[in-house]
Image 1 (spheres, rainbow, N blue to C red):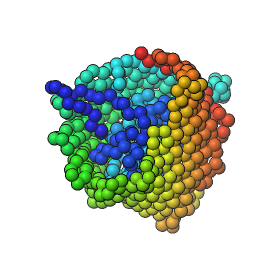
Image 2 (tube, helix red, strand yellow; image 1 turned 180 degrees about the vertical axis):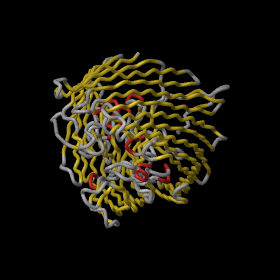
Image 3 (cartoon, one colour; image 1 turned 120 degrees about the vertical axis):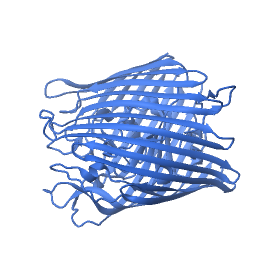
Image 4 (tube, rainbow, N blue to C red; image 1 turned 135 degrees about the horizontal axis):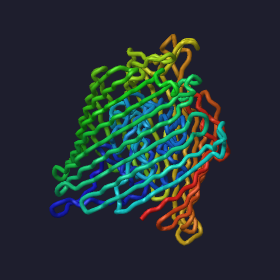
Length: 614
């Protein structure tokens, strides 16, 4: 976490966040922190202005507007969404909240069951490429760090909304959803508190897709002595939804799932002298996944999984005359008690070492390694290197190489079912990644263009030999991916005119994967052929007369084995000092498409709402 306190008499006074410019946002890694404009990797930031301006109700929907991020939803409002980066699978990306890992060893399907609402977010950082040097295991294809906002001033805010497709179900009732979100802030000189709660529910968008979701979230920051800061995070979410065709269509038409997640984290930022910052942190995550294959007969194919993850970290940032050192230790325990997967546990220990230095003017080099011990797979080492050079004003060339590992989930290893069988002989996936590109950053314009190559060995996918066989995971191939990425964002304020503010963003990703099959019995693959080949997104937003705002977005996706599709969304808002009225339209042209498995996505959906603050 970034150290954000200044000395006062007796106790430290906490600063408020004041950074608004994208190129000045500090990327919040756990040891070394650099402004966005000086990063030597393909990192993209979705700042708070864009977070609040997009026509999205969930964190998963927000991520779908970021280039290279593939969001495969199975229901409305992000009730169950798989997240992958640059053609990887949903188990190969790491999700974090303020640097706290929220990955689930049971299955990556539960990774986005987060207790935060959109209003809790300050910005989202997406690191593309193998990132074990920075975040440890499971950051095989990249990492998504959701950075929540600090309370700015004492007050309350609320958001109430309702939406519908205006289509009727078989009973003649119209499909609809509704939601209420409330946030309270309490700020003093030595403490900041943020508390939010939300409720969202609806009767779905087709048969057996009704959902009911509650979230509560707390974040506190406390001064401790003259220079130190304590950060506390806690949250809980209860997510119940109809799971028609989510995992094993067409047999699971009557399926229902309830996922409950509780998490907590406490960190202490200690300034040990002028040049040494040490941050110990402990965290805990509990996840309960209750799945009914046929909800009318709950005793038949009823899976109940309870997972507990304990994590302890010690991160250090040490500045010297020859550069900055980042040193870290991590210990992680993963335990599960499951009716299907059994009672399992595994432990992980890691050592981070990073070094940043500038041997020449305008040339910056970061290098390091993560050394890992896992109780099931032994010792591994994952080095990485990146460098960047400012060659003309705000222009910067960069290059990086990295390595990564993804451990098999408990579902991969031990699942027992009529159509899916685990494989306890699986090996971890490993990746090697290299990238080079050019960046430009100034107050109004940000651009990134790069080309990467990635190789994944021991690639895990659920496969089978003939159609009548059950699915079983195998280390069935080596996957080589070449990728071209381009992202740009332009923003400008126009004071005193009809158009007061304009923002335009365009992003494109092209992926060219190739598969070298290493298993003779893998003729059918479940996930490998679902990855993206081309993705193009665009956003334009403007503010008029300082009263109205309008956002238009488009997203084009082409997958390896699905037909391509393009959707368009819109949001319009009328804003006053203490309230705003807004209306959103998702999938305006009612495009029919699939993101995951056999689940058709909703057609057009329209939402209206009211936000207030005081």
